[in-house]
Image (cartoon, helix red, strand yellow):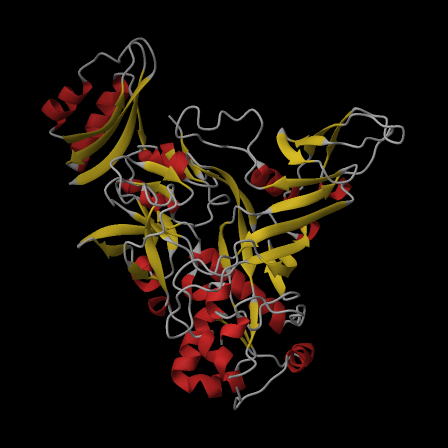
Length: 391
Length: 135
């Protein structure tokens, strides 16, 4: 495909270094393209910043807690009573965001509260709090200790790497409950007989809704992650670009995902927040912002997408979802969802978000400031993910 | 005319007194009981919406005070910790009075204590647990 505007990431990075780069948020880009058209917008704008802030269950951290004397090859570990996976090297662990505290009553008294879990440990760590680490090993000649107890904070840990196997879902279901009872799900509390709807996307600000074919977001793309700088390190688990799309290329259901990695020590408790979903479990709300270089008019057009041009499917979480029945009960736009009510089954029902649009906007604005001030240059994707060939 | 929501705290000496009857009969107040936990010989509370003439409302509150009933405006009993709230909006799905609501188009999640009935549903529904109800 040939374009009227052709820029490279190297050229944009040179503009960043010279302080001449022009950056707008994905929200602002809508007006720019409406006024100037995609070609002129692509000439004027170098980067569009996106943002999203929502619970992202497939998140976690690799921790190395260092050795004490005598040494231990820990096969099991608990951090603030939350089990971490120890089947790696001697004092390396992976702590998942959704792991509840070992003494949590779970759903024994339904709906369970899930007050503390892996996501909360991660937030405590970035908040500078000391955590209690308990490790068990079976004892070897080189690692004789069988148990080790220690209290340490993030600074005292040799390494802490946030590694989220699936973040930034490109789009997400709008949830309803068509059963006769209130249900407690990862999509929030859903009243019976389709009494309310919930959704979880930043819509027009969301990273992969602005780069629908993953043309600039690939392995090595540098991003805002948890308040620090992170990278896209692969496509995420369940990445599936082969779903129905609108004429604008925007997916109409889940689709693409990203795997993200970054140094936890550079992150902030404002952008990594431990959350408890009533009756479901614990998780971590993650703040992510992806810069999209406007290399040509095609990217200008993609990044000008509006809420009323992005659609998702209404899915029943009472019966269909738990029983793996893939069925849509209608299509709805984010414009309608964000108005506060949707038309479902011939009546108006309230629609509420789980994803913070105001925080998503704050991320997009922060990233814009990072780039215009010259402290953040763009990372060029070293490999594009499945779906880029669909254009 | 004034309309306000109060949390009335009772103790073992006054939990069985006809408080609501007196508020209506003697002070001409419109009373709407939003929530009540009355436990014999223990601390109890009543969430009341009181509507009436401002002077009579104040007199009614004085009557409560004399009777040993502590009346706190709802604002003092329900609190949103702004450092914890992420403005996600999950609470707005469950709030029955619209005290927690979304401002559009900014999508900021607002809390209006005057509309709150202190039902407490938001406390456990809030993912980062920013809502506090103290009574």
